[in-house]
Image (cartoon, rainbow, N blue to C red; front, side, top):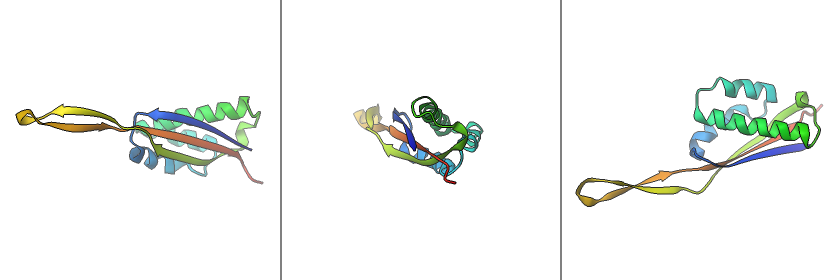
Length: 112
């Protein structure tokens, strides 16, 4: 059985988030939590929150055993981009793009 958790509008670019997400795919939940807690990146913190949410969904809603769960997939999609302007010389302005992303974590029972 599969359980998922979604974190929408996370204030980090999808490109930075995907580097962290690739590290935990296919691992057990305990290994993934250990790796994320010792990774010094903002994306690791946000992904750890989403992983804990998926774990709580599995435990409370689907009544699955936490020990047998594996990270089946982690999808990071681009969210909407907030656009801000930064004043520059001679009355011109540059665009600042504050990117967001949507994080989806899917957990599944370990096969075998």
